[in-house]
Length: 248
Image 1 (spheres, helix red, strand yellow):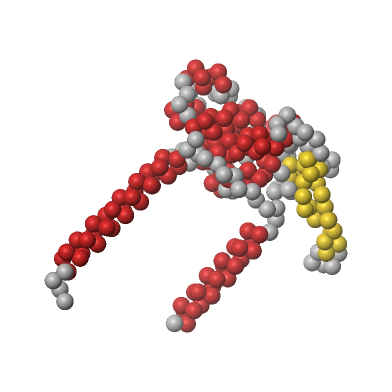
Image 2: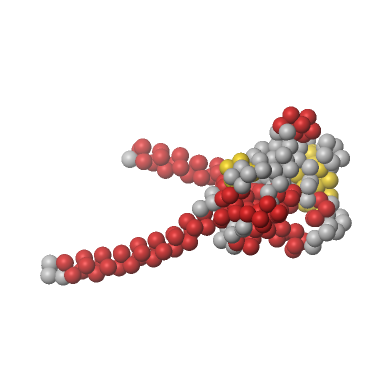
């Protein structure tokens, strides 16, 4: 019994720690992605190739699989999405040399094949929307989700520049420090806020698909599996009643 109480207490402490960790830092927004939408994935693939693939690769995704899953012909693939590979079976690799990437950014930009699974779609969605102007950074931009990021704001022209808003708070050592509380859009971009949210949502949906190409199929199949289990449970219950109806 003591061991059981100890295990329950440890579990409660772990849950409390996770809840506290989830509430710290910049609040994440709900991405509301839909990997079952073919059009969203097609738009997301276009966005990724045009704005991300120059620095970040997706080495676990091949162009051939992309064409098959997104209902694209080889001609459509080569004309619109295939800029870094020469063969349709090539993976989606960045065209940026690693040595140049380290020289320009201080580190090689990470591969994004599994970013949606490792960080979560809400994290990626909020990250792409949370850049703001910061002249102290080498690229002139910082990010509320990942402070001191080396990544430039490649979507600035679409979203429009954002300015940080701070308030003074007392730190653990008793000193007052600046705390980022909001981002203010100071000029219009080429997209409205609604259009930009959709742009980012499609991009994140594509990254979610790349991280697990079978997810949409798995979710669709899961509905039928649940229905089968419900029907099987009902038949099993009726069969049990039939077998035990004469037992008192």
